Length: 422
Image (cartoon, rainbow, N blue to C red):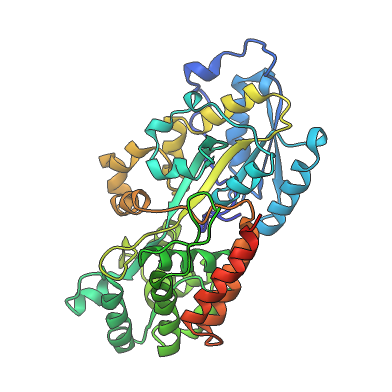
């Protein structure tokens, strides 16, 4: 589970400067039937600072100590191990699970998560779209912890030499990728087009940006058969066919595409904000020359897919009250601030995006805020894994020229309809 797509995946947390902070509603350790030790499961902690964070909680909550279970870094393996545990009913080990935002509907529909009381969490302080990722059929089943939205990174130096503003439309992006990039020995544009979750995100963003959808709001009806879907998939397929999207992009995940941009090989890159931070730091071939704008669409700014992570209480949690209290702590304002400043990860608290000191330090924050506010979740479905596999397979066939975009949309409609039939 990397934060880069869905983020990114995995619970990236921060070195705790907050061990003395506990809000009034989470400090009281008075015994209660719902309080006691907890186990939190997450994908591998790649940064190594989740342990110190939980140690801070444990020092101030000796009766509600949290044990960490780190699952594999691979999203597929993490999902499989969580599913095995959650299917175990009362025999499961995990009280809290850190789940990619697109797993919420699937886990809730399967009965693996507890419904949560909205009033216990500061949801009104969150960016509104992120809350939607934590609901299923109108009920809250998780609490957003980290959000994410795709951005278009670009070479400021190259566009300045050409007297060009960063592209707002697909036509502007395509024109610069075709004509400007070759003048500087660069490839034009890349995203994450290997057949995996990243391709689902890239394809869905293209469909959304053109004004289309894949499923209805709760995943009950297939809506992908539209001119917008043909236009979105056609945009990506045309780029590969004409060469302004390099064929190498068909092998790119987040890291490979970031590295290509960071090494100075791309004019434009669709990626998550972490790629901006990595590419603009010392040692990067493009340090100081990285800009970021919202993803373009046919007629103006497009629509990003929301990434990030939600925290959920499992149906068999031993101490649900303590689990909810821990989630409230992890989503509190001081902790969320450190998510950004220590981890360079997009927090869910709205006011942080307008803090002048933070904007000076992270100049992409206003763009990211606009991208998140206009973003949409991936298709919600109890069968999300299968939905994603269908999208990956069919869109990849369109990108490699095996089928036309129109044929790809027909196939998507037929195959997704087979998944959603009762």
